[in-house]
Amino acid sequence: MSLDQRTIEVGRSGCDAGARGEEGLALASVLQELTGAALELFDPSCSADSFLDRLVERLGCYAALLFEMGAAGRPELAGASGIGAASRALPVSDDVSAAIAVGRSEPKLPYVELARPDLLAWRFPIDVARLGDRACLLVYFDRAASLPLQYRGMVDRLCRILSTVLAHRDLFARTIASERRLDERTALLERIGDASNVGIVVFDPAGELLFSNQRLLEMWGLDASIVRPSRDGVVQAIAAQLLDPEVLLKSVRENERNVESEIRLELRLHDGRVIDVRCVPVRGSGGVYYGRGVYFVDVSERKRAEAERERLLETERAAREAAEDAIRARDEFLSVASHELRTPLTSMQLVVQSLRSARERGVEMPPERALQLLENVERQTRRLGHLVDELLDVSRIQAGRLQLERERVDLVTVCRDVIARFGEECARSGSTIALHARDPVLGQWDRSRLDQVVTNLLSNALKFGRGRPIDVTVDRTGDETSARLDVQDRGLGIPRERMGRLFQRFERAVSSRHYGGLGLGLYIARYIVEMHGGHIGISSEPGVGSTVTVVLPLVDETITRA
Image 1 (cartoon, rainbow, N blue to C red):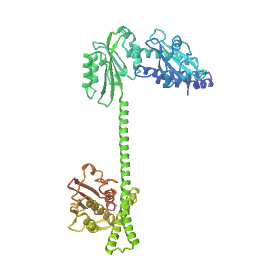
Image 2 (spheres, rainbow, N blue to C red):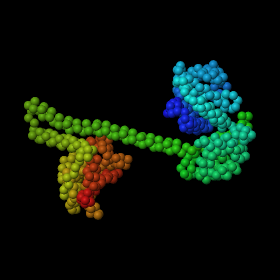
Image 3 (cartoon, rainbow, N blue to C red):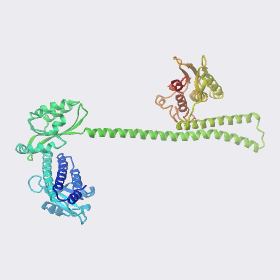
Image 4 (spheres, rainbow, N blue to C red):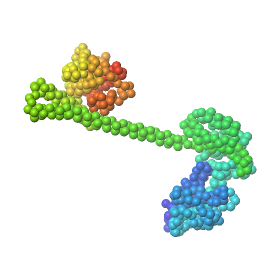
């Protein structure tokens, strides 16, 4: 609720003593809040905008401007609420500057936001240096202000507080006044400084303390008796809390060598806090050196926010890279899939064209040639069916619909049957497949899915085996609880950097330009093996060959646990 609305409510509730008490409490609350906002201006790096934003909100006004006299005696806009960046950049004419300086209540400012004819301006002079109006506060209402007189009085009182804040901010930004003036203002500085979030301590050239505030003691957990004697006690007490005390001690030594230097430090404490430190020389208006002021600001929360922002950015960057990788893999897969599906279709189309051409020319095709063409069609049909089955299996895996039909199966028999089917491929590639198994290895598995795993492993071994022998070894593990299947080729081998992703979708050990396939065989094999409660792995050395190892529990562990 704005101050206008509060005032209306108070008027409606009557003028009894209780209402006046509530209004007084509201007034005190607003004054306390705005006083705290004004005290934040002690830090020279703080903008007056936040204070003016708070003032506009609490008074329910349209805009507020703070002007300070510059070095040339011209008013300069020190802060604003209610006007945009473009207006802020506009220069103030000489006539308007003179109007502000002499105290005209409604100077014609060049800001488009204030061009409305219904705006009403209040002007509050601020005597910063007790040398006349060195600053002023302009408050604009978009209707006739209905604030009680005590609220104007409150703003006057706030301007007096703001006057003190601006005066001492200027004092901290340039130099500390002479020792006599510093002594006169010590009590006031202590009261105002204690309300600041900045820990402040000022030492004279000999290292004796001139000023410190309560925030300094709270920030470092110090006792006033440690601070009072000299700089050394403060330095030692602070250094004891630092992860790297040498950072502070080195800056102190640099200070002693060069009193003109301005030092910025970032101190990290054992308790995890981070303190930003600024140490500057303090000089009077005549250039007299009075010592050094040190300002401590706890930036722990800001640092944590920055670290969290970096973490989120890194997470987002990783997610974006993963998405880009997935898109690249998808695009490559679509390209490979279209090629792989087109190849058998093209081959069968050529067979059909040959048969049709012979028919149209009235040429009788020799039976051997016709048989060759039919065998080619059959081979390409099997290949096309295999590709389609792989795509269907991936779809089932993604939808969670791939099911197992367990029965008692001999893994040795499954391997022997698959090897027999690869006779023609072995003849074309020049490789031989040898099965090594001493006894049957029986387990509760899905026969057709196990056949699919062995088929995929042997297909890869033949594809990349460079026509060299392939060994298939079936045995039980040492604890007799699982079966172990090893498929070893002596072919190309796999680079180490690609092995970690071999069992993912659309991944392949070599370029798709030189070797066919969709890059789904090992992915499907891994999924089937894991559905059986087993695991699959690979060891490889480029130029030597690869060995894929499958370990399968002999029984369904879920049934055993049940």
